[in-house]
Image 1 (cartoon, rainbow, N blue to C red):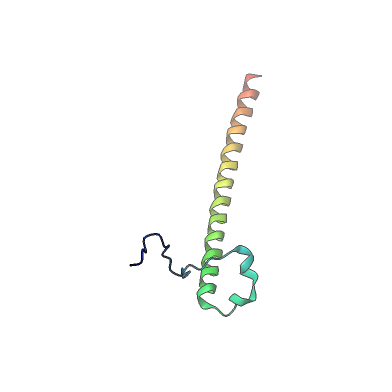
Image 2 (image 1 turned 90 degrees about the horizontal axis):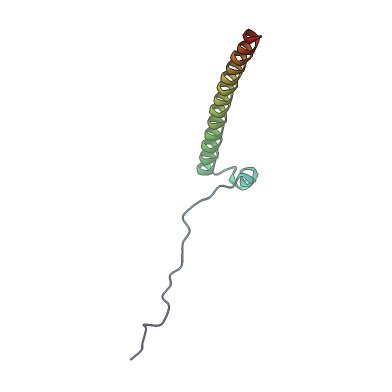
Length: 80
């Protein structure tokens, strides 16, 4: 009788995940791949949206800061 208890059991791992690295965006092997084109477009759209939102928040913060600064300056002027 054979003892199989100590023998390692392994199966071949099949990779099903497709990863997208920013440097890969410029590689020509994705040019004719509709699935990767869609992924790249979604990546670009989301990045653009995040940048727009960030810019809007930045503008709003600058505006509030300027208003607060102007109020402080007015207080100082009125004290003198």
